[in-house]
Image 1 (tube, rainbow, N blue to C red):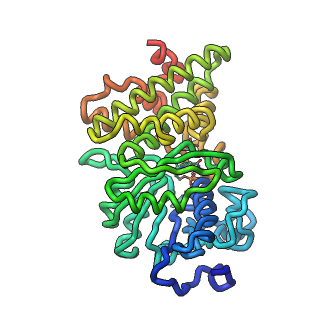
Image 2 (spheres, rainbow, N blue to C red):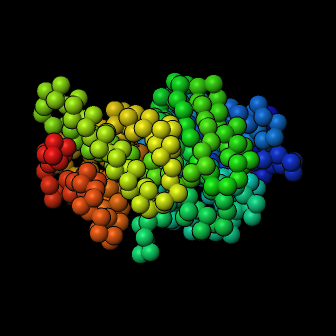
Image 3 (tube, protein in one colour):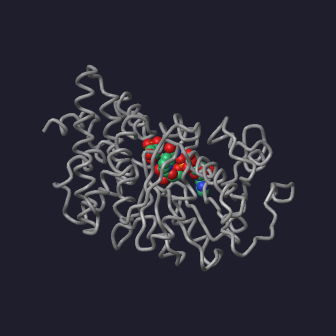
Length: 367
Ligand SMILES: NC(=O)c1ccc[n+]([C@@H]2O[C@H](COP(=O)([O-])OP(=O)(O)OC[C@H]3O[C@@H](n4cnc5c(N)ncnc54)[C@H](O)[C@@H]3O)[C@@H](O)[C@H]2O)c1
Ligand SMILES: O=P(O)(O)OC[C@H](O)CO
């Protein structure tokens, strides 16, 4: 289908029955890049409808214009991914119900703390045969215990949900720098392979791994370790000391990620930690991610500016995941009596809430 004024406004189009239709639920930094990747492939793969709808949480820009309208006029997400053309077959849709209508492949990519509310709004609004994938790094903690975002989607919407995690700094993939990712799936390998085809490009190499919890926990927990790495970076230390401390944080972080994941789900495989979603994402995020950056600023300020303030100042509307995840992990540890087993995770949360100073990360990593 060639784009037309009619489809660019998000109006309904005739969908041939045998073609899959994709909607991206989310349009932040990674959401926009995901839409770009997918849209480049739907044009090439005959089993997919060309058009990719991207749900936009509507906001009014300083110019007075609506974000979704500007995206459709310029083909750029000027707020969350400026300077990058998304592909003319990406259509921004501010109405959530309209965005998901007709789609049988739903890509969820919103900050994890918003997912419960979003799922509630989608109940009864999606196709019964829809398949989902979550690109979201984070989890929910409920009375009954931790709940991964893919499980939340499956439980609330009654659909199967794979995950895609990896060493994926969105701004770099947007300019087509090489990166890899892992699709985690539960049982249906065919569906996982369909997702792999939808995301793969010469610069974005995707492979499938039958360990949905392991893949998702890697993506979730590395954000807590990235906060610890940021604290180390923000402290006044010589470069050599800093490098040694960062390496120690990553090593200990990986150990806690694996132990925590396998205590929660005995099915989590050792090998998953060697996929892109594991050690590769851990290193990438500890060196170049937003969690690292904000934690660095927090330590430089001696903990005097809150993470909320720093997030607003530094990320300009983008959302941090690691601070909230550290709190969620801490709650699980406390409930289960595991606090002593996870000193790094515990220390990160205690620094984030001001119970310990940022320097505590060094004392911990030297012990
Ligand atoms: N950015 C990356 O490099 C990257 C890479 C891999 C994975 N991820 C993960 O992807 C997920 C989404 O991150 P992102 O980078 O696409 O988003 P982001 O942090 O760049 O943007 C925040 C998004 O939340 C939306 N939003 C704000 N308030 C809202 C509300 N009340 N209701 C609904 N939406 C609201 C904003 O419109 C925006 O689209 C996160 O779990 C993140 O960890 C991000
Ligand atoms: O920028 P961060 O810290 O949210 O991390 C981004 C991605 O998860 C890296 O894979």
